[in-house]
Picture: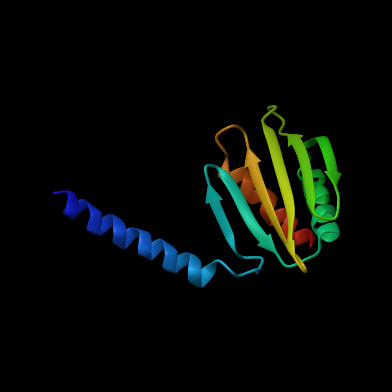
Length: 125
């Protein structure tokens, strides 16, 4: 019985690895993933441009800004929705003109709001 369980789990693990191997190195603006309510995207731009686009996106969506800071390698924007749900946007310089942006809305994540933020950031780049 244990071997019957191990085979499908092994196949699932291999399929996951194959997916990462073929798609994990893409740095296009359309590479979006979601884990535990956090939506993450890789953008083909520099940190300064990504941070400014993120800041303008938050302003466009009329979220209240609480924290807004960045350096050459990382950035953080913390804001709230009208109903006081916390939004945390983290930026990380992943290499030459590649910045990862992760958006967490609330404790458990609201993917619809996070996707709206990502969409607006992409429009601002």
